Length: 328
Ligand code: AQP
Image (cartoon, rainbow, N blue to C red; front, top):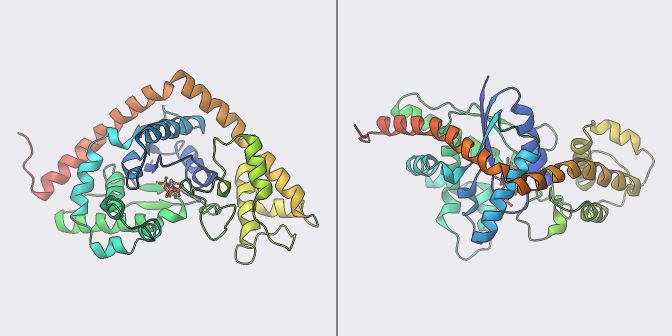
């Protein structure tokens, strides 16, 4: 049994990208491994957040974890800000991270592009992410393609610490799905589907009304060829819709291609919308039940307790190795 850790930022409404690239894998992994799944609220504030919206989105992500099938008896579900060791180890690891490494991160470049003032938190985000993972000595980190570069840096930081202070941290491996590691925007297949995209038509939110989902999919960009074929280089829009279809319906892409051979995009898009709605409707029903009963609050309390047990031990050992005087 391996130890698995991952998280999602409460920086907007979760999308099908987050579901396919992350949550679907969380649900699978919980049956085989010891899992920790957090809501990374400290990361969300690396870009400005309205406090009320942050609170609501944080509760929403926690409830969606449960609604999507993460079982709190199998996995610890918790809020990053309720385990103070994340911020503390984050600082310690920031001192082991080079400016040049952070400057190379494409997410920093993307999110800071064209902005006049950029918070320092956005820049040092990868050091905090390294702390999130190393605090639990996680073996495996399920993430979408976009997070691979951050994970590579986490591995470098772990190796650097081990080299300077003696072998201690587990150097984590990435776990990404073969198809669907990068779900693209519905309006621009050169950009990933992102919950903070100001154009709501670019993403399918897990909490979108099914009628809205149907409309968004019917308006999704395609090409003029009218051939349902998986070819990410020449047909990126259609290939993206095929990936979403394949994940929502749980069928291989080749099977979907065969089903729509000789047909135009209309029937394909219509069925895709139905597949997504069929996946999302029970999830939404469960979500509203969780929010109504408030059962996620107890789940988060227990999750944070479990996480702190592990995190405290790691942080003490790290501080001891780095030369801090611990309370006697
Ligand atoms: N489009 C995507 N396709 C596949 N996986 C994706 N993930 C995000 N977008 C896609 C995966 O979801 C997890 C949570 O991501 P995050 O909240 O930590 O931040 P992110 O990667 O920056 O995701 P977003 O949705 O684009 O958020 P914002 O807009 O706030 O930056 C990660 O495992 C990620 O790989």
